[in-house]
Image (cartoon, rainbow, N blue to C red; front, side, top):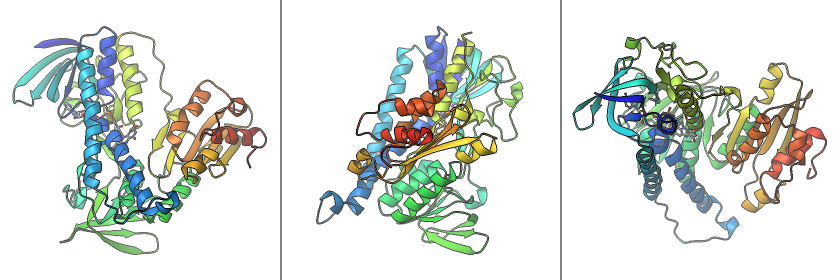
Amino acid sequence: MKSYDVVVIGAGPGGYVAAIRASQNGLKTAIVDKQWLGGVCLNVGCIPSKSLLKNADLAYTLRNRAKEFGISFDNLELDYGEAVKRSRGVSQRLTKGVGFLMKKNNIDVFMGKATLNTKDQISVSMEDGTEEQLQASHIIIATGAYSFTPPAWGLDGEKVLSYTEAILQEKLPASAVIIGAGAIGAEFSTIWNSYGTEVHLVEMLPNVLPLEDPEVSKELEKAFNKAGINVLTGHKVESVEKTEAGVKVTVSSDESQTVIEAEQALVAIGFRPNTSGLGLEEVGVKLDQKGNVIVDESMATNVPGIWAVGDVTGKLLLAHVASTQAILCADAIAGKETHPINYKMVPSATYCHPQVASFGMTEEEAKDAGFDVKVGKFPFRPNGKALGLAEVEGFAKIIVDAKYGEILGASLIGPEVSELLPELTLAQKMELTAEEIAHNIHAHPTLSEVLMEASEAIIGSPIHM
Ligand code: FAD
């Protein structure tokens, strides 16, 4: 039996970051993963999808906007297989980097499936068929989540796909039904549409990216429709059937029922935590109704010495949330001072085209919460950098409390808006006001000038409108 201060189960952005910080804190640490270092994010999630989106951007430009940029060719050939190969290379580079970081930080790596025997002992069924027994003063559960598909839809990885097959397949479908217009559905809509796949995007709720400001969602829907994506919001999937040629998806709205035939269906309707078969309940760890591990502010479960971070806690299924929880958890184990995460102010981004990014409350949520709200909004259209990039769709919207000028949130859609978030989240954290953002000199020409102008709209008038 090998003994450690900390054993982390799961090597995604929650687990591997927790392991590094635990080791940095002087704790003898091991990490276990049954499949890969880097978890979903680095292997089949955040990273390869962003790599494919870069290729998609180029493909879209060459297919649809070449003339505008003065580019002509006789026979455009787009090799999607090469785009996937490039994305695998990007992924492998980062996962190798995680391996290197494990070595550098003296973290023992066990590649195998972990199960808790007791509240401080873990069995690992190693890839080579052997069994390892680990003893740990602290165990951090960081096993992530899996994509949920109703069993009747017959997920087979060929005609009915989850994100994993979608991200790894080197051949594009000629047509596809994407079920669910959250971040994953929106990003794959952009990728496949850019390469010429006929995309039908089905969403049960009234808007695409239903958690975003409805004004942002409408702007995205407009852009998707313009790009040729068939957006069906307010449509519920009644059935998914396999046919000789692919799939037949029956969807219904309040008014009608439609049958869509396509080569493939991608299901992106939500996630469930990886908690079953881990032995958690057997050692007394409390789970919520959905199976998420219940944790307190320092990521401790109800069983002393067992902690959980990342998607398995079901808080916000984002890589940066997993990593932030991980650092907090490893510091709490080491007895360091920690600060609870304000989940309401966590930034998030969707890298579809145009990009969407937000944090805090939407205008509607702020009003519902009883705030006297002031909103500053500025479009990208008059912004010199956006014009130069030929990416003028979208706007920035900043929401403040009229009484004290406190920043309550922001909703952005447009070019590279994910990169504009940190200025606003830092301002919010440091309790700056819109006036202070407006007085901050922004380099010209930059996309960030849109934030300055939206802030000016709150305190008076923006210059360029
Ligand atoms: P995971 O990354 O899921 O890692 C869990 C690890 O635990 C896995 O490696 C698994 O093999 C291992 N494991 C599970 N059970 C066991 C066991 N019993 N024994 C040993 N090991 C086990 N988030 C963002 O913030 N930005 C993005 O742009 C973004 N894009 C995404 C795109 C896609 C297509 C997808 C699917 C997700 C995306 N996400 C994004 C979400 C992000 O990937 C997750 O929030 C993140 O990976 C969660 O990290 P985690 O460490 O909690 O879990």
